[in-house]
Image (cartoon, rainbow, N blue to C red; front, side):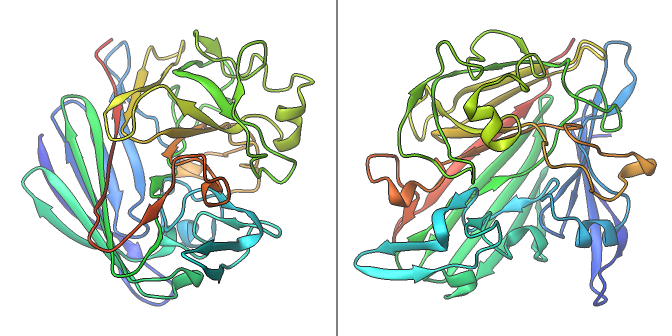
Length: 346
């Protein structure tokens, strides 16, 4: 049934009620939580018409509270890493929480664990959040609005943000996908195509070196359909630095214009996911550190590489590389981007 329905999902450790909102276009259905704005479930028909849940997630609030893999959550203020948790903006120095070794990752204690305000607007779910001045070290009060819509076999995410002082903003979603089913194990046989000729090489802390490198002749050349696991253990320094794929790819599209990003297909189910975005980059991550996560929905074990992420974004650590597109937001400006996850008919 198309439309939106809601149901209780449980309570947080401090007693806040968490709701799950189901969005459907009559073909695919998506479950969203007000905790972290989390994508909890994405049900898609396989080649035989059976509904398959292709998003990793949990059946209970406690697992979301204790897991540290950002599973399914909205990420902010800054998706990905900022080196050493420090940056300068307009001559002022700022220090952020370091939560990834000596670096700042995904906004520190960020939006992924926050309770979002939720309203319905027709067939869309609208989530809002206020991040106060000084939140995790960031300047300015940031007003964030994320709209989830399910239509025409697609999950559409519209991001908006405004600030009252110059700040950084790099919003994304950290869904882990497995198109064979959230409980199917390794994603190694699923085939990916990425519309990127360049990537941003990283050191062994996953911090960009500041260059754009061509993918040609490397294990990161995914411009034609390639099994995700075909090269992830190659003796390639970039893969060895981070234990597989965990890299930002510079997309071919122009910032602000919706462009094809990636396509992934499962040979087991026939399900294909096509990603489009207005953002300049995408982090392709193969769940190299998923082991140790709590058991998932229906007791599923989410081991290493049991899911992949395609996190649309401005490049990591861009504030330290002024030649790159900058995730700087100023008063009076609107941070506005869109990402679409599309599941075409088989």
